[in-house]
Image (tube, rainbow, N blue to C red; front, side):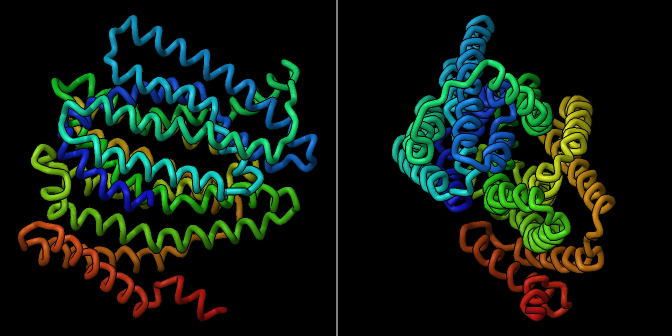
Length: 454
């Protein structure tokens, strides 16, 4: 659903609001994200890990309430600060609507369910919310003046499910527990270790939109970059879903002393993941020329170049997240995790300041892909240096070669025909046949290799 619904709603929103409207929303959201990250303070990652390690009912209750109460207090305080700053700087109404997301951060208890490995409730609520917001968007967002309605719909779709999720808390934790200030402070200190890298993440994923919005006379560039990244993010969300499931499971395996088994699991997941992300990234770049005109509309001219660049995020982000959530965090290699984040953030700041002023959204795209690639390579290097596992370079090179052969066919030959939905669909089908067929014949398909061994 993370892939299918955006594929339907994104072109509707793009054609209704135009690049300017999409950019206006994305620019305000980029500013709100700085407040959200402070309000979250690393709780989603730390909370999942802490709950997974709580081995008794009383410990579970104490851990949950100690984390959640300080989270609510902090989120309320940050919400008030954001609104005061917004008033002083005369931000538009879009910003103030989106500050409600800060309160939603404090109310978010999805980390609790992830920690106890009950993903059904979180998944179904997110699915229901996504479907409802999708229906409302295609019903009510029709022209540029509907920007405020679009903002309200998206904000509500994130905040409202948090209230419903609390019903599930009653089933798992029957009594309220009032933690001491010392208990809350203890969790605050521990979660802040996870908060520090979140600052870096926001910098290298969000700063480009803020700088683009400040330097641009209009917000079209921000809209073009945001929608290009949105397409890749939809795909990344599906690919990275396995990390959410594996984090608590691997944390427990590590506590049980099964480290070598976890290392083999990470290596397997990474190998299969790369097998799919390499053709998706290269294929998306290949079909962007024929897809952009009919999918996004006339105000997004030149977006195909941005998609071609940011499509490589589909390879490096999921791979980097797999190593962090299935290796670094469960094995308490937080120092290395933080080092990769801050290295990426530093590179992002430098490259954004250099490239955006001269190349606009193209420079922002290059800076984003470069910083994410550095993060992935640093994590991969640590994983391979500290474990006996190795990535099969020969296999990866064969997969890349087949994927580029696919790219030549899709962009150079099929790309000559008139753009439209039918051509894009044909390119996807032909691309799948070339890649899966080619890698299987060349014995570079890990799925076939797994089946043969079994």
